[in-house]
Image (tube, helix red, strand yellow):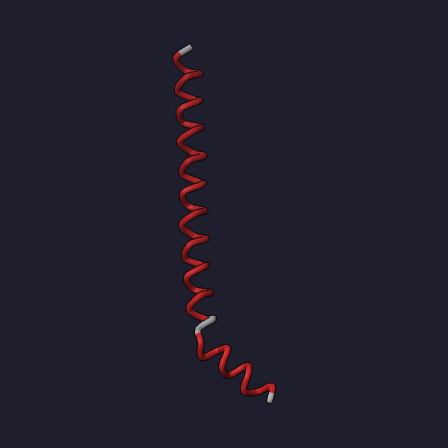
Length: 50
């Protein structure tokens, strides 16, 4: 019975670790994209259209 409890705890910790890593990676990707989409980028796009 104890072994199955340990397996459940290890499984929950593994899932929590994977979700934490995924969240961390998404946040860094979002920050990188927001830096790329600065106001100067939009200004350049609008200037090229005219």
